[in-house]
Image (cartoon, rainbow, N blue to C red; front, side, top):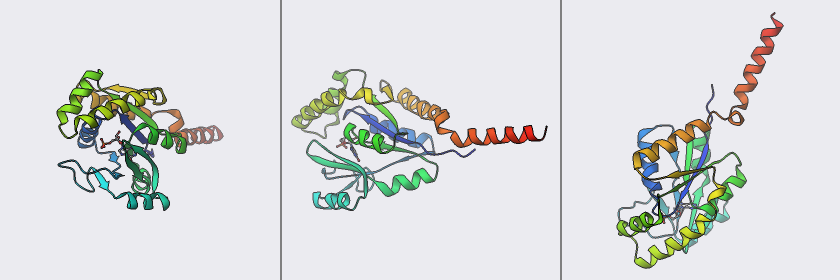
Length: 210
Ligand code: 5GP
């Protein structure tokens, strides 16, 4: 049976742990491809161009927009973030489940363009844990932590737009939950039109032979 790749959007507050979950998901299962976004924000310590992000100047980013090279883009806390188109298209053709780890404005644009996209929202169990994770990361100034908490409050207003809510209490369980949701999604009748068509045809042929 042909297995078609699913386009999956994963969002969550900055500090929800979604990046770590995605990394683990990719290490443990081989049918996933993670899209690498372009951004104008500065690399954090330890980040590498082409691994976490493609780091761009505003000018280069605007060129990508003008050349229609992005599936979606959004401004988030004064920087551009966007999803390059070519990689996603290629991996879906290869039958991979392609994950976009993007914020909510981008998520909604992707859903509008591709209605079959599966939308997952990841959240820590409570907002005190979120603040502690953001501070503990040590990569952001207190001012940025506060602006990310404010942004979280805005993003929380859109959670119902997502198909599933996954609470990141323990990393292992959350990763498995995400994997299970995606696997079940493959069984939806709407995603198996070709298979259904084929068995119907086979049944018709069987009746002819009766
Ligand atoms: P960070 O600066 O913490 O890496 O990312 C900030 C936010 O931008 C996160 O919510 C992240 O998911 C989101 N983001 C990363 N890449 C993209 C993208 O390509 N498009 C959109 N719309 N958001 C993105």
